[in-house]
Length: 282
Image 1 (cartoon, helix red, strand yellow):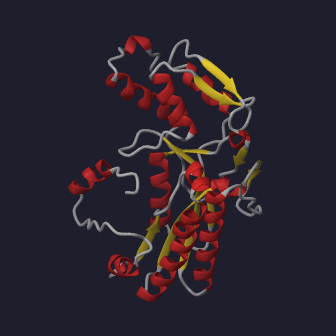
Image 2 (image 1 turned 60 degrees about the horizontal axis):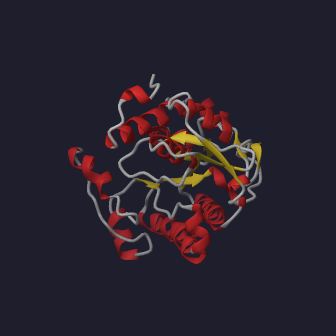
């Protein structure tokens, strides 16, 4: 909503029993209204752009950390029994492969705010709410309201426009990824499986390197140019995340990198009038 991606709501009109309330997560009266009669809350409201968080650290902390803290307090007051937090694998910092029990080493205001949000949920769990923390990888893939500042979507966008793929540093740095439809299914899995209550779960597809992402693009778009730069030190951070715990519970990602890239490139290719002869789509 903060990015005015209202078209993401169009398909909701086709689903029976959905009530939409446009409000601020920091507005206690609106939150009380939204929680009326709720049994389970899936909390996704957040400021999610890492570059934005460096420009607006106080706002990021207020919404992501304190907004979550106030929400879980109101959930307890409203008698909500289940609370599922969409957290982020970025809280681990650089290194890995990280498991859920590893100590977070957040880099920057966004990941720090998510650590605070998780702490607020844990506190609520100590007071009886059945909470689940899902640490999502970086989301990619075609969606009604997309972000193009995350690595996979950005590479697909550049490739579709025949612009150079920009690689910061060596390209060996890794990124934990998850397709947008798998991110949705991971959260739904937690809703449908009460045994996930009390758990912290990594929800990722894999953690490929930037060069592996570039290679995947090159298999779809022939002769795509690549440019190396040292302009952004933050993108040199490398994070690898282990997702075996959630898979052991029965959840499986179903959409891979090639599928996510292909669907974006094909859609953008149609927009600019590029024929499929320019692509090696499978």
